[in-house]
Length: 145
Image 1 (cartoon, rainbow, N blue to C red):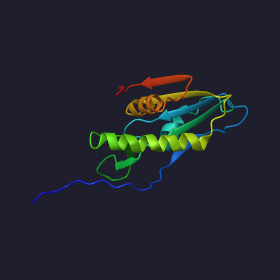
Image 2 (tube, rainbow, N blue to C red):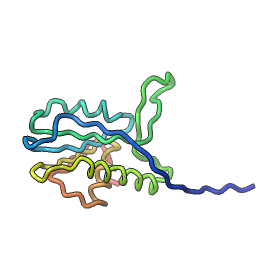
Image 3 (cartoon, one colour):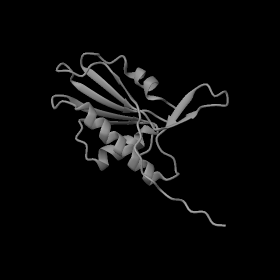
Image 4 (tube, rainbow, N blue to C red):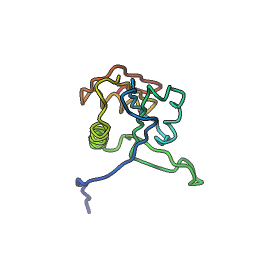
């Protein structure tokens, strides 16, 4: 008996977190990609010390959630694994395209993209493949794919 792996397409939804208000006083828009094991709503708290009037923070949420240990209490997330990486990358890039279009970042704002740990691979893939015009790319504790 042989098995065959097939592929289908479907529509899905995902969340993301924001901090502060995007308006005419906003100088910087940050898109911050968390590392493995984080959720965006917790990762975004690391940016709470930035001046609120000048900084609008967007923290995309990695799509694959899982329990962090055997007590099934805390949930973390992962951007990609070695399984179907090309397909999953396409899905994540499509998610980021939709998020970026939804947020409508004003032209007067500087765009800063930060990738932490596993988020480095998503930050670099998205900005390079989509040719995102940004003012600063910050990569910390991760690998460039």
